[in-house]
Image (cartoon, rainbow, N blue to C red):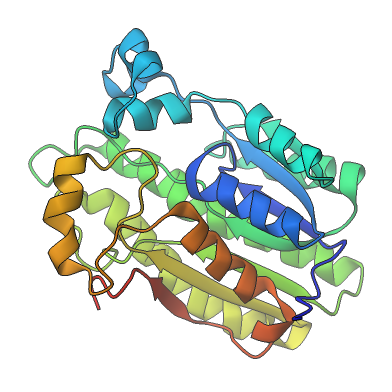
Length: 277
């Protein structure tokens, strides 16, 4: 049996109310970690989708995906608690940079010092953000959540780590395997590419403090948005011949936080079934 060394560690996960974030919360709780989830419920109107259509969606596609985004964290918290785990949450908007110290205050007040940070929350615009349709507002929104919040969250973790003379810490960012070339989603891709660059630089700075910093870059993962038709189109480009599941990414994130990954830092690791290699 492998001991991940995560029992009683406090893990802060952003965007943990559905999809990869929720699977990651469950995976850490299964290792005995204490989990704090932050999330933001988005309305269907934000994406031009009828609320009732989103609520009734059953088949994969954007309405189903946005229905998941409209959820609170209650469901995943209930699953973790039913399994005997410890979890708390707070709904907050990461575009507001001033709330980051309060976020850590809340997590640490409830569960103890945060030693693992998973930057999973992301903003992705619909309809797609392309060069002829982009705007200053769109670019700023993508970078506010996908890059700026990530860096400020890491900075707050590192500051608190130093203040308490910490010796062990983990940061895992979530990108996309299309970060370097995401035609049709140019601001999303660029904001994730920027986070990958920060990953390498910050890992160099905080390594002497005992903190590792890595990024997982998922391929196509079924979080509710990939239609059945799109799945069939994607499969030939995935050597393992299946669409990813949220737990595929969650398992990689838990590994990077584990004791087994103690000498891995500054890496961008594609978790994609071989897609976009």
